[in-house]
Length: 296
Ligand code: ADP
Image (tube, rainbow, N blue to C red; front, side):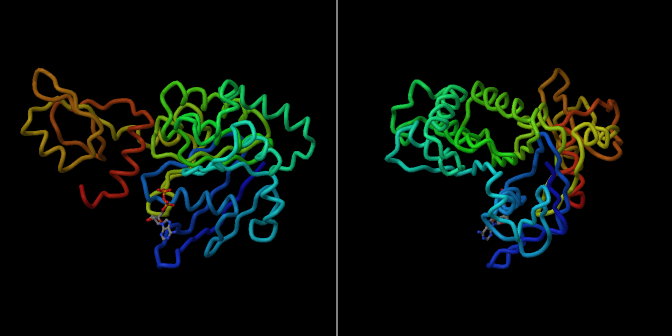
């Protein structure tokens, strides 16, 4: 599987530019789309799943042109939108059966096997007779995941997947996706939470104000941040000055005042120790420091 995005722009009817010149190549495995709220992640995803047309640019999905072969692309897609809703009258298993039908599984017995299999996988087998709208928030989210995956899609797009999930459910969800990513499948997941992608995505893009600020592996992103992350012990007074100049990552109270981790290009602060960056440091460096440098 391969997705190639070239020069993609999206300008909404009200004149809002949500994507600017986006170029990305996405291959098999898990791809993270990371950025703050309003960065353009949902817009890009809605374009990829053919719910919205771009203003400009080309998207090619495994040889299919997104503008010309919309039906072919829809057949290989599974999408879990951020605000997933479903028909309230259906029982949990009926809803999945319906989703399986939509994905093109015509045989009733195959659908039935698949429905049971997915009810088990997402931990909803025991509540299969319950009306879907009576499920808890986390359960609804899991049903959303199952409906996106039941048709064995080749391209899976999940928007802010862990919203509303508790830690245990997050892990379960992550495991389902990592299992799928071993196959000939692309999984794109968008999030504003660095922890969602740090251990699972081979590649990622940082999106800010509709533009790609970085694309590559998490390791490359971390490497680019090396030499820009510092730890300083400081008193309350110095802390205020630091806050004005640098992007602060964390502040822990200590005997001297504060133990502060921050990112910046050069640091003229005594007792500053350079520390090994992690993905969260890298995210702050790129998104809050480099892209807003003038304000620091
Ligand atoms: P994200 O998913 O990263 O939070 P979105 O793609 O939802 O970002 O939004 C990107 C920008 O486009 C935001 O400024 C948002 O307000 C704007 N936007 C989103 N949808 C619409 C719309 N239907 N009409 C106009 N502007 C929109």
